[in-house]
Image (cartoon, rainbow, N blue to C red):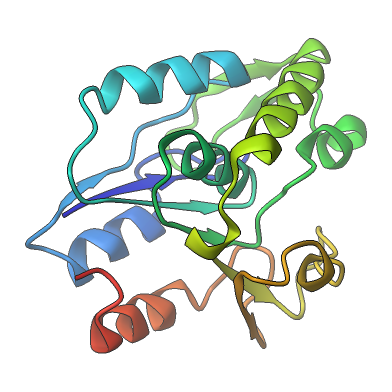
Length: 188
């Protein structure tokens, strides 16, 4: 079993969620790369990292990482766990996501360019043509202060959707979901 964890905006691969995944699934291979700012570069990096594709792959992502997990689920036809995913990041990042930033854990400086919004839009269009919503598990915080997920049940009626109280946008109940996944044998 291989898990690929994709971090959100301003985060990196050494965040607490990647460490929690390694802790709860210590027998599995857990990959949690630092993602570049440019969306097309993210896709190229992940295709290189996972070539050839592992037989049993599960993709997990939070916020912007949830968008990339959605994209990879569509491209590779693999299961994905999406935590407060930003499924229209070209909208959510337009006002607050363009410019110079620094990641929280590694303090890595990067620049998110306005042109990247168009790349995100193209990736979403491509993913929407291939997505199998039955492979998706959405975990949505009722108190997400950045993204409004109320429309997702209408857009993805066949997907598994779980609403979690008190998790916030950063999804503080991530480990609770991992424990549930392990207990219920989601990844056999």
